[in-house]
Length: 450
Ligand SMILES: [Ca+2]
Image (cartoon, rainbow, N blue to C red; front, top):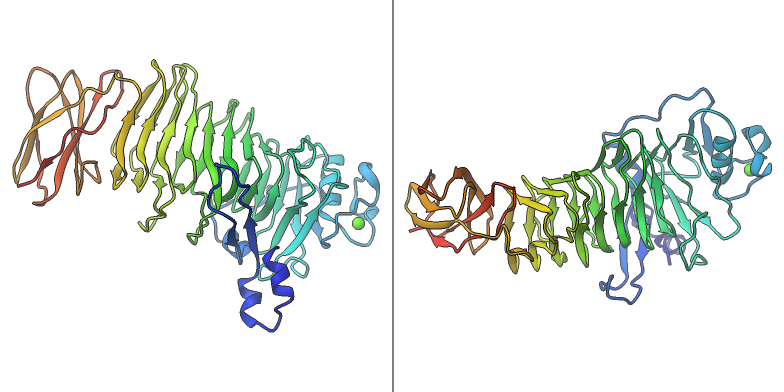
C-alpha cells in the first residue's frame, strides 16, 4: 500500500499532508534483497529536485505540454500530434505521444494543482498503456511538483514496451518512478533528482553520441541493479552525486547491486548502501573506469549506514583498468575493496579512506599483491622498503586498514623510503604498494605509533 493511500484515510492528521508519500520497496524473498519491505519517504521530493544544480529544459519550438490529469488516456490515438486533439485534459501518455509525433524537442511539465509537491499526484501505469518508441529528445520536468509514475503490480515480468526511452539531448528531472518494470534506456541524456524503484535494472546508458549524465540527486531505492552500462557510446558517461540503496535522508531501500559496468565511466560523489555487491564489471582492453570521492556504507556526513556487504567489489576479466580513488570513504563492509578479477586487468587503489571493514583490501590474484614493509615509525617519520619499483602510500588507522591518507612516495627496491609525517600516538600506520604496472596490493602489516 502506498503512503498516499494511508494519507487519504488519515486526513485529520495535519502532519500527514506534509510527510505525504512513501514508496514501499518489496522484499522479493530472495537473497538479493534481504532487508524486508522498506518504506521510503520521498516527500517533498519535487522541492528537493528543484534545489539541484540541473539545467532547465532545452528550448523548444513548440509550446510546453502541461500534464493536468492522473489518467492515462490516449485520446486521439497513437498518431496524436497536438494537444488540441487530446480532449479536455492532457495525460502523461498523451504528452509522450505528442512529443513523439511532432518534430523537435518537447517540454513536458505538470500542473501544480494536480501535482503539488506537498501531495504528489500518482499516475498508475497499467497493462493497457502503450508507450511510444521515442526517437527524438524529450524533457520531462517535475521540479517543484509531486509526480509519481507507479507501474501496476500487474507487470510481473520485465516488459520491453512499458517504459519509454530517453534519447540524445533528453532530460528527466524530479520524477518518482515506482516499480519500474524495465530499464530506462539513456543515450546522451541526463537523469537527475529522480527516485528509481526498479524491479531489475533501473537505468542503462547505451550508445550515446553526447554525454550521458546520471545525477545529481537520484535515489536508487529498489531492484537488482541501479545502473548497468554496456556501451558508453562516443560520449562521456558520469554517474555523480546519487544515492544507491538509500535515500538522501538516510532511509535504507532494498537495492542489490549499484553498478554493473562494461565500459568507461566516471563515478563520483555517490553514496552506496546496497545489499549484495556495490560495483562489478568486466572491462575491455583500454577501458578506464574512475571511481572517486564516493561513500560506501557511510553517508556524506560520516554516519554509518551499516548495510554494505562489500565496499567495492568487482569481477575484472579483460584488459581494462579500474582506478579506485582518490577520496572514496569505505566503512563497515565485509571487504573495503574486493577484487575477484583475472589478470591482466589492472586495479589501482589510491588515496582512499578504508577503515572498520572486516577486511581492508582483498585481491584474488597474487600478482600485484607484494607489500611494502614498514620498518620503523617515530613521532616524526615513517621508514620502510618496497618489493619493487613503484609507489608506496602511507595511512594511519585505529585498526589494520587505512582511515587517513598520510602521503605517498615513489620507491625502489634498492633503498629505503622515508616519509616525514607526524602521527598521533596510539594509531597504527599501514602501507600499500602499487607496482609500475599500476596494480595495488593489500595493506601491509600495521605498526603502532609509539
Ligand atoms: Ca486527454
